[in-house]
Amino acid sequence: MTQTDATWTPWTPATFLTPTRLGRLSKNQQAHAETIITDFNDAYQQVAATDQTWTFTGLKAALTALPMLVDRPHNYFVAVVPVLSAYVQAQVPAEDWPALQAELVAARPQLVEKHTTQKVNQEQRAYEDVVAQVEGWVQAMAAQPQVQNLSAANQRAFGVIVHVTAELLLTGRHLQPAEWDAKALASVMFGPFTHLLDKDQREPHLYQLIPFALTTLFTYLKDQLKYAGELQDWVRTHHTALTTMYDPEMETFFEELTTAMQRAEIDTQDHTAVDQFTKAYLREHPERGQKLFATDQQLKAVGKRRGSRPAFRRKRRR
View 1 (tube, rainbow, N blue to C red):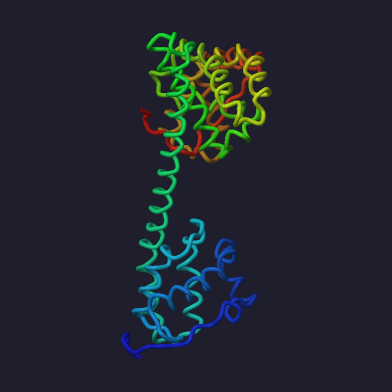
View 2 (cartoon, rainbow, N blue to C red; view 1 turned 120 degrees about the horizontal axis):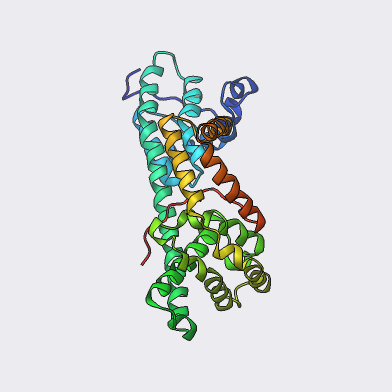
């Protein structure tokens, strides 16, 4: 056979996916194998064929078209080439496999990249929609007398507080206003909120304004909120914790620790390695450990807890 006249009839997913063949695939590949084969054969028929046969040209065209024809998760696209490689190799003559394998391997980077780019673009558009929505809230509240009476610096801080809090709930937690409750609010305020601020925004006057900004926001959105009273009560109960939750000493310590970990090439996803390194670092810097302990006791006294950095990126707001 040559690359211009080679043809064959593809197997159905059921024919290919025997227990033995499934066992040779990874867990992720097994999870998506049947869907991948079905989607690929459908794509092939749409873009490359008038009958049930395959060609080298058709294979390449179907791989190119696949991410534009189906809406699947990223792990699906990671599994496409390995699954199709096993699928194709199992049913074509041995002499034809090297050329087909080359087509599959060559398609993988573009296949995954196309989906990743498409996903990022969709997420970016969705995030920009959220930013525009929250900006509309800020502009509407800016017309209220109690907000107009704020100084220019505090008006800017008010907008920052509303944006960061709302975006953490909408984009970070994927919760619409009707789903906001005290538990969700607590999860974004102690830790994530400060991480989303630029360093020059971490000023005492901004933190002093947090209870007012949150109360104003929840009052403005009261018709959309199912738990408006619960949210307002939470803000009142945690007034002191909110206005004092940023501690420069603690922030400086974590920055120093992070820098030291980077120099030591510690994998920050390895919790055991991070824990061991932190203990060793505190033994080498006992004065930092004493300050950390004192600050930690203060945090516990007001019921604060630190969170992790959210998984979405924040662009500068209008």
